[in-house]
Each structure stands twice: as C-alpha cells, then as structure tokens.
Length: 167
Figure (cartoon, rainbow, N blue to C red):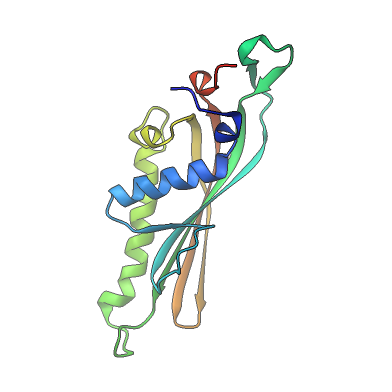
C-alpha cells in the first residue's frame, strides 16, 4: 500500500519506533517512544531508532523522475530497560533482583526470533523491510534506585518499492 506522502515514508525514526512499540505491546510489554509526551513511570522500556547513512542502493524514482531514489539505509535501534532496584518497602528480594535481567533477556529473545527478513515483525513496518538486525552491545548501569540497561542493535532497512506514493 503506498504512503500518502514522501514525508510519511521518510519519517523513519517515528515509524520504526512506533512499529516496535506496537510489536512489543502485543508481546504484553508496555513500551514508550523516545519523544513521547507521556510521563515515564519508574519501570519502563523505551525504544529509540536512529537513521544512519545510505547504503548506495537505489531504485528508479517513482513517476519517471530522472534522478534515482535511495531506498536502503543503515540504522541503530536501542531499547532502554529501567526497573526499580527495590520493592515498595525498600528491600531487594530475589524476585525484584531478577526481574530486570528477565526483561532484558525477553527483549533479546524476541528480537532474535523476529529479526529475520520476512518475519512477523515486518508486518508492523508498513513501508519498510528489515535487511538485517544484529546485536551491537548492551550497556548496564545503576542510576540512583534504578537498574538501567541499553540493548543496542544495528541494522539495515529498505523502503518497499510499493510504498512510494504515486506522483
């Protein structure tokens, strides 16, 4: 299905963040987008997409324009998991201690299962196809009363040829 405008197609970060928010929401996780106006709760999962440079791949421009349209880009995807280190009474039970690691492991598992080209994840990306998505690192820190992990991936994404609006 073609997009209504080029602006809609080239809103990579917004579209990718929204797709991952919907996808993880369907996996029963409440995810927040980076630029969301919502106030973040103490425990949250955030997702941020950053578009990189073009890969050099292009297709002829829709509508017969004389210049090609680059349609494949590198991108970075970060999931931030923040959980309280203590329960409401201020103690750190085994349940509270392991919860953070379990959420991080769950995100890694789902991304590993669905990162393949043609996966169910791509049904959430209306205008794109993920060429690859691979882990690039995890950063863990303790901030005040929170455990914070940033799980990073790098990937490559292509605009679907049928996504371009008709001119």
